[in-house]
Figure 1 (cartoon, helix red, strand yellow):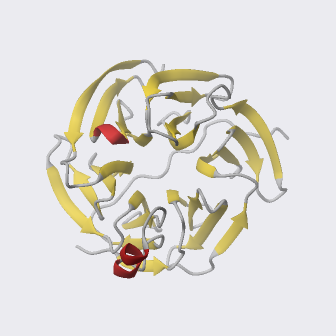
Figure 2: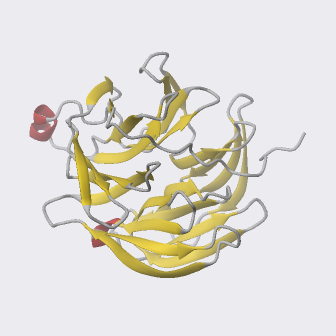
Length: 293
């Protein structure tokens, strides 16, 4: 199946795509473009917000305020009031790292990890914020991606992208206690690297392949399902959306592509969509209101 072009966004690094059912809109970030994007389910009513720094991942709270993983750390953010407050800096002792992929668990705690932007050395971490404190879950991370959860919340999926391995980790939905990582899926040498992922209602993982030009469905037993071809080699993230959660929205990137590569794939950096014949799950929100009153 091929994804259809929805918005010719020309994002440098489109990422973090998600559906907000209250707004009935798709939201995503252009990390290097320092912009937050949104549109309706059919790609209309496009809105962009210029940002003071790079927004790497985010989630909404019950009041539709944003818990934002900016370049420098976690912020509570009221977009309408243009109010942004720092919760916690991210790795201030590591000048080469920034936040990257993040998502809430099924209980509404936000997990986000980082990337070493200079050499992809294992300098970064994955942390979790529950509304009270920030806890470190993993260390020695090169590039965090693929954070998502099984429908029952008992498995955390995670990829350190340069390793080409998507791991799954036993996860207690109530306490957040974690087991040891085990290999769930390995991407072949010619298939790009695992980027962002989401999970459908059947428990299958949909993984965007940066450098692979596809979104690959991976069944709960780790076998390949269907693949969605995307007319852009650098596929970054995917989510289910639309009123019936039956549309798969896909972000892509243009960064580091040469002129000949852009001529061959001119829609790189665009937002794509397809209807793969399965449904997704509602995006889990941060459980605690970020602003009082």
